Length: 214
Length: 265
Image (cartoon, rainbow over all chains, first blue to last red; front, side, top):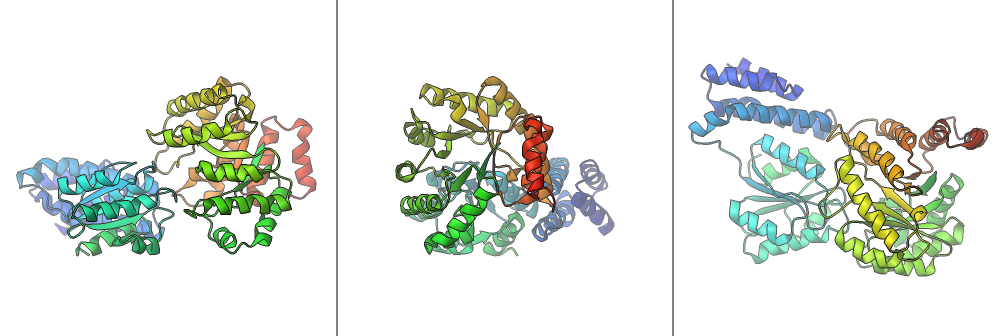
């Protein structure tokens, strides 16, 4: 059985869009619980992809391909997961690029890798006002907020978002992390956020640490 | 080909330090070397200094202009900083950049209206970054028409169709290249410009991709670039591509670059 998991993991890392869903379907039809396929092949595969991206062994197009293969696998398993009472996850993450900023590439990568790591991701998109973050945290009962900014001019919105979460009384139950080219660990500390991601793989590591899932 | 030298940008750590230390010699050295290596404009950016941008930008303009005759490309979204910098600037500056983002558009249009400033028109709107050729054309259309209606002549407008990385979508390179061609065809006399290093984001050996993409864009008509003029391989690529695209009379610039030993490494 472990052999099947290893093979799915390998195909996922290779970004094989045909084989991954096909192998997931076969494994499920052979009676392997969908949750187990997810936990023992797809999540570990994306974990490797995230690490290899961090070390520079894999590049963005390859990560996107693996993420797509993961989605194709999930699609096959979805109905079976629902039958079994739904997929468990590490927690809800609300992601968004802050107000005034339209950059979404980094944020999207973080979202894909977080999903791949087992978080439930609510991606708000770009140009997200502090109050939109606040509303989403309440609505989805999020454990973590991930803010992205690619412009020095929009970085102050990160601080405003942290403050807005505090004013809404949510800061006690939600961790906040920030990332994007101009963002530094020092800045994250200054604005009172909890964590920093230097890249998409690093963001996933930080998220896991913050939520005690590492 | 209009070359905007991109090095004096405060998002680079060494430049930020030089600005904070008011190290005029260092800034002037970088300005001089860019001008000597083909820059037609020297970009000046003090954007990372929230609250102090006005003073720093003014200092950058006077410092650069004390060293070179090459005009500046004022790189800021803040109308107060731009106006302060323009007040000090000698000669005709370039502005980097107006876009269709409402706040930016409304803040910058009154500054360029009716002037002889050169202006970069960045294809970005409040709807986000354009992904397709058509989305770029739609934004370019509104920007160029808006500028012309405000008495900015076409030949002073440099449309930047916005380069997006092929690592996230393999179509992004061609969408940009086709936009260059169509914008130039639609608005006779307008220019195009871009900072193109974003094309290779997320991929290895970025310099290779950047150079080849530059050549492809020049082949489609690109006639401006925001680059590092000290990057010898990139500059050689530009000279070669211009000659190959039939925009270098009697291959004069190419041969001059050859004699100045700018084409070998």
